[in-house]
Length: 296
Image (cartoon, rainbow, N blue to C red; front, side, top):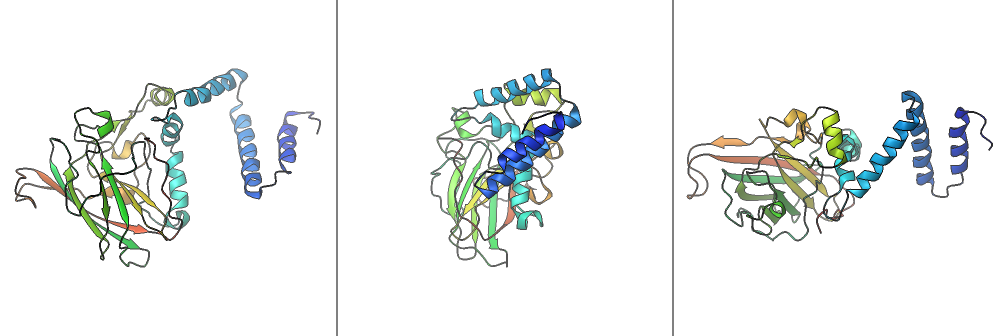
């Protein structure tokens, strides 16, 4: 097709892509071209702005390594990761869900841990927390035999691979749900933390006048054949960054009830302030697969 005016560019590309053999790829490409071209027309994108945008996308790739994915960080900072999550969980976006973002700190092969045991594997000062969880299917029946990975930051806001003071696999553990779909563990109360802002994502954060903090949370990854793998984060109620999470990850269903206590604790060595969390998860039928671990 010979292009005579700007409106014809979109038609030419769409016409060329009609020969794409894979129907799903053809559908995605056509929608991408239509929206991308309309975006350029709507904002009247200049040539200088286009050059800057190409440089920005290039910088995202240049900042991505085996242990840090700047593209995923940017996706979260635009709310795109959360949108994809909510579109694909909770009956395809129709109901509330405890599904959430994987984040950049999940590791394979967390230590197998007995239900109720501690995942504190090196001295980690902070208030103790006792967590009890139930895993159900959509009909309310317990899901027994599910593998559950737990990981979270320290009370200082560091994951174990960021902090030389912490032992390998500190604040991580793998549990198996019992016949009632239950598991529990002891740890220390996590803190919120800043995302890296020394790359293109930081440029966006500063340009939009936002802070770069995530609210405190516990990570869960629940896996069993026959069910869609459930990835979740349960956020600490009362955290000052709940409504302004830089990654837009907080949904109403994910705000946990972290209860503060001052009296006797479930363990005799705990004195003073401690916390408890009771949390329920619902798994949907679907493909059981583990994501690629961001940390190799």
